[in-house]
Image 1 (cartoon, helix red, strand yellow):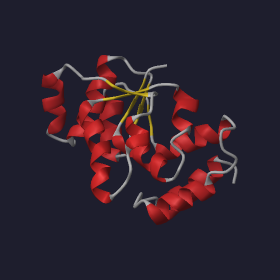
Image 2 (cartoon, rainbow, N blue to C red):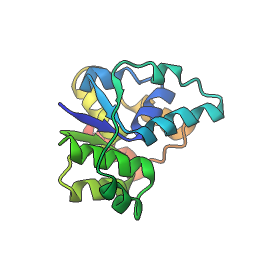
Image 3 (spheres, one colour):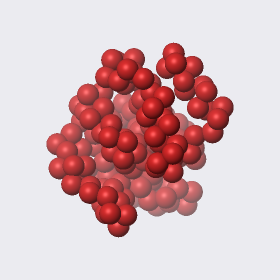
Image 4 (tube, rainbow, N blue to C red):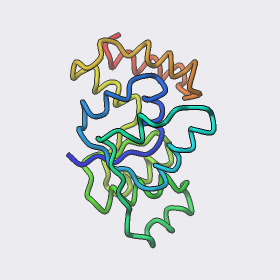
Length: 161
């Protein structure tokens, strides 16, 4: 399974102590250079990103379709544009992306997408975590990851909690 990731899923799982879920679910994640830059930028907030940078399951891959990236940059930020371009290039099975506009653009280009909350649901269904509620609560309170009340309730229902 070829899986590409944007920044949000990796950084937020790391900040909640759940980074280990990614290799359990996907074995390997490909990320473009701008996503790596955004992960490294967490250091400016006194976050030790060495565990992310040293993770063997995260592999840097450079997208080559620069015209496509330039087209995507008209509506998306560079990390999202590079992630989508890379996913299209390598015919990824899944793109991990949270931003709504990025998800919509990715789906317009035939990509299967899921976000952080979808990863947590997969992890629970696969038996890698017992409950999602405390992780989601941690995301809401401590990372700045916005989850509206209706989505919160929907995710808990999907998780059977």
